[in-house]
Image (cartoon, rainbow, N blue to C red):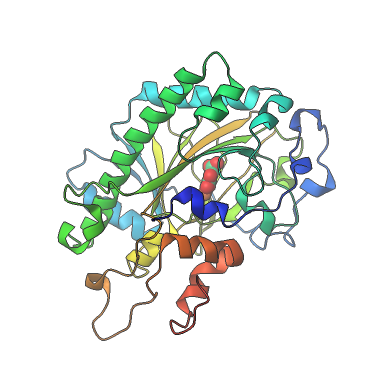
Length: 360
Ligand SMILES: O=C(O)CCC(=O)C(=O)O
Ligand SMILES: [Fe+2]
């Protein structure tokens, strides 16, 4: 039987004890365990560029594919407007996220993600790779949120489940559209990407929704909301509330803040799209900073292929005189690699010897 995204995460448990889940409202000073220095993250204090901004693309622009392709190749990320997701739905998901994180800690702990669980409340999965703790809390939805939501809101869970369902439907369509725009810009057609299915809508795709909350922080300059990482997805579509915090990294510019633009969404190239394009599109390194004035919410739609499908550089994008930069592997195998090698995963598999079986 094919494995689902839940099975995959379940086989790579994260070992973060529940006692580390913070009660941020009670902290008036930044404890040592939350104080970051460059020792904890090499890029912690890398330069920040203030005069450069992430491309913003109107999806109704006649040149949209070219613009998406250029943004993917130069930034690995972009903002979009005119994306067709109703602003009422963005308000609803933001409202849901705010309501969830405003609940008292004991209530949120009722739906804490268990050690080998996949959905629920907890710290970021990447926390296990760092010595310091991040100033954030999260809630992951994979599959139906019904059981968790019923525990959180015994009287309103159906309304909230409906919002998640509608959000997923819109995001799934938008992700497929963005994928074709990105690949189309490289001359990849439907016939080159068979798993997209007969109607080219990537029906077998899988996704998770990651809701993030970054509380007000007493010493934001020394704290980290979510440490630098790339997403293990094909694409991520992120909605952020009206509070800045997301930053993307470019070798030539350093950290660039992505200011929230009302109604717009941020799109990140993930590691699998980087592999699929044989390295033409970089997967963007990004992080979230915090501030001492307003709490911040973000809602990430993490989108990828069926977990057992072989992903490899598209032959059309590989120079016939060279070998592909990456071997074929499944999302399941990639997530297993990421669980061990984290931000070095792409370079690890690049050097991976296909004749051995390290990736299983
Ligand atoms: O909060 C943000 O802006 C970033 C969230 C993120 O990168 C993630 O959930 O993977
Ligand atoms: Fe991310």
